[in-house]
Image 1 (cartoon, helix red, strand yellow):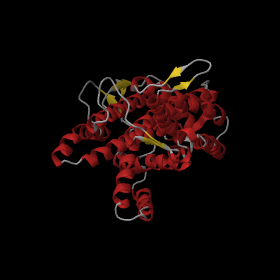
Image 2 (cartoon, one colour):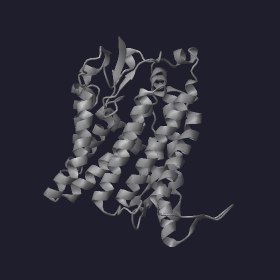
Image 3 (tube, helix red, strand yellow):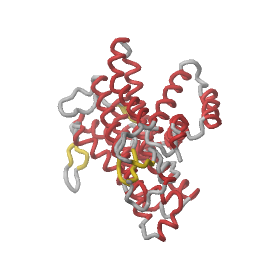
Length: 364
């Protein structure tokens, strides 16, 4: 008799690690396999349905001739990437951070700054060596990811020495420092931000075409989802969840918890950097508002709205947040007065978030 775990996309893996208690299995059911067929969990059906709908949606929108909704869904997927990356540290690692928007904004500004320098034919820097600007996504997006991850690594190296409210305040303080740095850059628009003349180029694809850009966003979302899924199913994810539940016990077992948590923080920053690069391209505009702590708060609401500590929940939360915002803002400028009660209802009647509520029977 072999104990196996069915993951969100249906893979069956043996639970040979000592760090896989039943309470830590968040996205699948621990089953006893006797060589017979397996029952598909609801979480797998919802995952397949979600990505199938996103894959086929442009066809329906083309029939309806609704380009605005295509742009809105692209935006939802981008924010879904940022929310999934935040959930890695918040939902699985228990790290309550109000600085995630800093990494999101850094990714966007990398796109904006390189685009402006490329347009004017100026170098990004001239000392100690000349660094030319580029408009190629193959160059710009990895730089955005790398710089966001580096910023997260530096901030996390200091902030993770603390915990609780002190960690929260340190991440907020660092994020606001970065925010004011970009506000002070008058050559890049200062407080007003700056416009991009065009989107990046990517392997000959026309990213100025909304349909092409939609599928690029879809591909990035799927990639991030699968990477996070693998991380959580691996030993890394088990240790990270263990740190959330009882870090002292994990240390007593010999695990370098600080290094695990710091790596998770840096990976989350990298994911936010990719989302920032995408949002900068989609809006063709970047501003310091993308780095403000209010943006961190919105990303946190998306995670909680969809389902904290679930793989698909943050994506659902991003869709729910942005779609409700779009509908209500079209009715009244005081849409937040109505959005607040909506969040209260979710908290009261859908504990664990929208997605978390649906799969609650699979939770231990």
